[in-house]
Amino acid sequence: MKTLATIAFVGLAVQTLWPARAYAQSAENVALVINDASPASQQIGEYYAQKRGVPATNVIHIQAPTADEIAPSEFAAKIEGPIANALVKSDLQDRVLYIVLTKGVPVRIKGTVGQTGTIASVDSELTLLYRRLTGAPTPTAGPAPNPYFLNASAIAEAKPFSHAQYDIYLVTRLDAFTTEEALRLIDRGLAPIGGGKIVLDEKNTLFNRAGEDWLDEAAKRLTDMGRGEMVVIDRAAGAVRNVDNVLGYASWGSNDPENRVRQFGMHFVPGALAAEYVSTDARTFEAPPEDWIPTSDWNNKKTWYAGSPETLTGDIVREGATGVAGQVSEPFLGGTVRPQILFPAYVSGFNLAESFYLSIPAISWQTVVVGDPLCRPFPSKPQPARSLSPPVSQDTGLPQFISDRTVAVLKRQYQVATDAEAVLAVRAQARLGKGDREGAKAALTELVKSAPSSVAAQVRLADILNADGEYDAAIEHYRAVLRLQPTNVFSLNNLAYVLAVQKHQVAAAKELADEAIRLRPNDPSIADTAGWVAFLGGDYQRASRLLAQAVAGAGSNADTHLHAAFAYEAAGARAAALTELNAALKLNAAFDKREDVQALKKRLGGA
Image 1 (cartoon, rainbow, N blue to C red):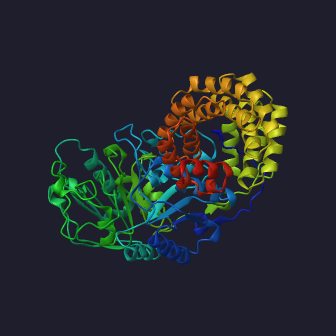
Image 2: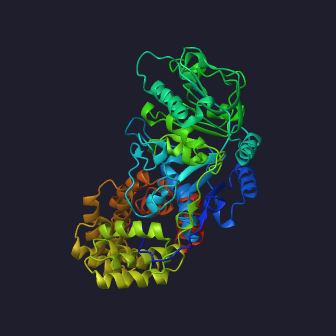
Image 3: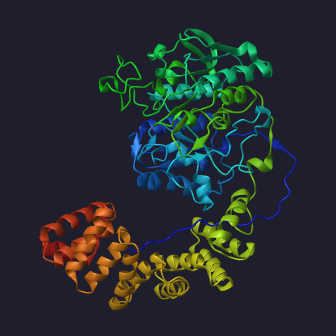
């Protein structure tokens, strides 16, 4: 099977003078994501787009599963990939600051638990999309530091969010137990009130006082800012209840024995924010039974709902909060929202998204932020137009900030000597993103001439030529890669495939495929190529063994199933061949139009 190694490209920006005007963040800076597989997502997204005036170019439609949890591969293919493509197509990489998800978009990416685990919220993982668009490495294991996190700095040092300084997106979602509650959430964010009480409810713990200290510090900071009249802090063991005009609420949720309730009696004003020290409160936005009560009793599964006994973020939204932060899985206390940053930032004029992300230490982790990112009850200082909507570079075809960042990344990755050479790589990627494949190939051809020892440039050009059916040129560049780097496994693999399938040079292909699988024995795409080369060479038993390995590791790849079907039939395993043929046709119905597939079906007695 062909394995196309992809690397993001960017480049240098032209020097442009901006008018000395200033602008506030607006719907122009929002990318709204609607899951067309969810009627709720469609209704909520359309309502928000109309109410906020989100430009049509900024509304991104996806087709994704609607369950709470999604596999990493599906997240990449059905959520992250389509969002990335839409941003690139409309040159929105820098202008968009906020990605807004809607009810019906999964909340959690399946993975392993623990401090170095791979489970994460969809929302938090999407914050790294900007960085990924530059080609920078973004490991998925464990949390990544949030560059916008204020940490111990004073609130006065916090800056409005833009890509002039920060290489992430701020991601929020419009979600609730019901569609109607999500629509009311939107309405509250559109008309926030700049005043009210901020309730800080401690549980009077005697040890591990970090969370309590943060609540104490929140009260102190607000008081020092001249906002002491807003503070309601309870340091006793009892819980705070029935407070009017609440603008902010923070507590331990169901981790406080006094908070084993669904409603806290907070009468939230429009624009109110809330956060809790709870591990799994955003695990689902499906409403529990009316008689369910949260606890912290992990030993009694009878108290659980949706895999946990703990408080649900949806209940705080139902109670009237406009912005809420929750967790899809265990973030550990150090990964939770810092109230001593959240509330002082909010009353200082930062919007909902900025206030939460200033107070969140980690991304690519567990946090979900619910609410309209633009909700802002208090006045703020406008930002320069340059920060909110930089121009597109004439050299690279990318907006300035992402162009500059990616030039630096690709200069290292492509191992080229000059910025001008990196610009060619960026130009190629930008044109490829716009569908201009000929322009991309022209830029890469120029780059290869200037920097013939750049393995990455040779690989990228070879892969595009191969995909476009220019096999002789692709072979030339794959061979150039192998002269520079004889153990480049993907070039060994791809060259083997094109030689065997397109040039019928099976003996030469087998030598390359054997070396590739020696280097990467457990890679299903490598096993697929080696197995198919073996099949074309008449070694049906070896082909069957390798393709069985490939199917086991790449169960959703239609080509792999089809290759296995041909190999099994040739080896006499008719039942297994029919199973694999059915699987291939289910994944790709277009196969049924191929003559060789029709002949295989006839030999197997139908499929």
